[in-house]
Amino acid sequence: ELMLTVNQENFSEELKFLEVESDPKSLRVSLEPIGKRSEISTRYRMTVEILPGGMRSQRSRGNEGTIRCRTNHPTEKEIVILARFNAF
Image 1 (cartoon, rainbow, N blue to C red):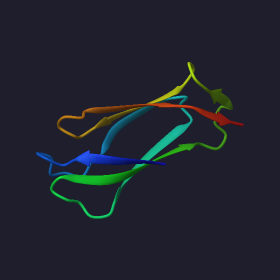
Image 2: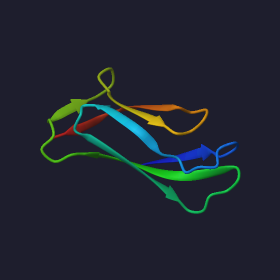
Image 3: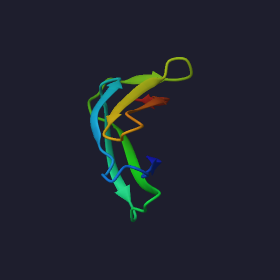
Image 4: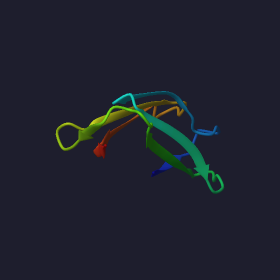
C-alpha cells in the first residue's frame, strides 16, 4: 500500500486511474480516498496486489517491475512507479 497526497488546486474531481499498465501483468492496482477532501489536497490509498496464479518472479534493483497509471488529474497525467518484490 502507498499513500498518495494529491494537489487539489484547480482540480475539483476525485482522482481516478483511467488506465493502468504493469510489468509483470500479474499486478492489480486499486485506488481509494482516505479521509475528507480539502481545497488544498486529498489523500488516497493505492494498493498493489500480485494476483493469484500470476507469474512467479523476482524484481530487484536494475530489474524493477513497472506500474504506469494514466490519471484524470489536469497536471499529473501519469504516475510511474518502479516496484521491487519477490513473488513465489
